Length: 435
Image 1 (cartoon, one colour):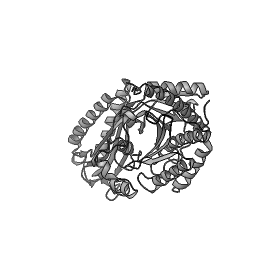
Image 2 (tube, rainbow, N blue to C red):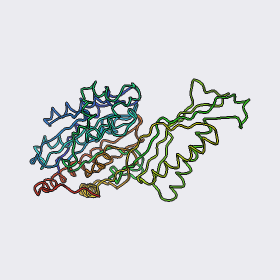
Image 3 (cartoon, rainbow, N blue to C red):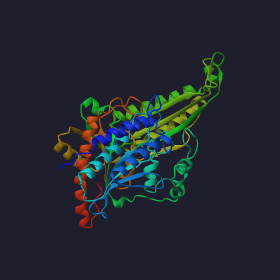
Image 4 (cartoon, rainbow, N blue to C red):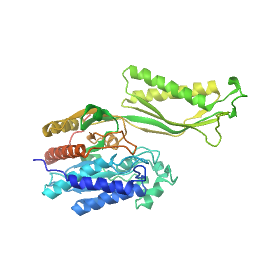
């Protein structure tokens, strides 16, 4: 029998999160700031009131555990993040934390003791809108956060990550020495529940999706083209060093590459999310001498990422020579593609069918902390919940009935997986990592 998650608790906490995070337009829970901290404090207090075990690591990731019968066996983990982009929505990330907490709360109330420990992790700073690095919270948990990342400035405050962590009671000094709260061999699996951030489930009329893999990326967040300002009427084309024209050519060239590779069956998305002239100098009667822009390229295929970056460098060189405009791509960040464990995907699909919940397997184009777990060798899965109006905007919308279906499926899968894990632990075997 499946123990019902505490859905009333989750619904209450969603309301409280909105009240604590609404900025007048959307939801803002700033990473390693007041907004994210309020969310962590709320979830921690709720967990403590239920009687669950609670602890923090040096990066202030939050771990909420319902003890199992065999506490020496590898732990079953679930969770997501609680930060948001500026003026985002209330469910991105938070749905995964509250789904996990609802499961543990339901089990605790019913007196259900799982075979092994089950832990919900509320992960810090997943949204890279705040710091120019992917997944700092989960990387820190595994001792994989580069020491130099602690010096990265937050986009709004310009204070370093280390300063922000220390101000909230974390210990950045330990992180700089690679202190790890998590070891892959001690984790049986990790299942992240998250709203879908695109339109697939809405268009297909399905409440849930089972993720097959997470795209990797390379990004240039602070690229800049420098040409020369000149009079728009008095400067002939041969004498112009027009930064707008140069970057426009780069946009068109990469878009053509995207179309060509997509026609070959490659997986790829290319985005120029920012393209702006200098408002202090640009004018309708001037040739623009400066354009700031950014590039975000993603794919499931490492070879496609490599090829696109090679093409990007060739385009930059050629366009700079042709237009006499210097294009500086600036600092580079990246993340590796991650494959979700076939055995966990099969388990989720089987349990969904058993519960009568319609679901489909589908890829994930956005980045998630689940990728870090998978790349550390932890068997990992992702469960998508249908969500209208996309994500990273105030119109994000998740029906609570869909969340309830996701929480029930999560509960069923975690309970089934914990029983499998206990059997493995009794035989002194580490659950196999899917290739």
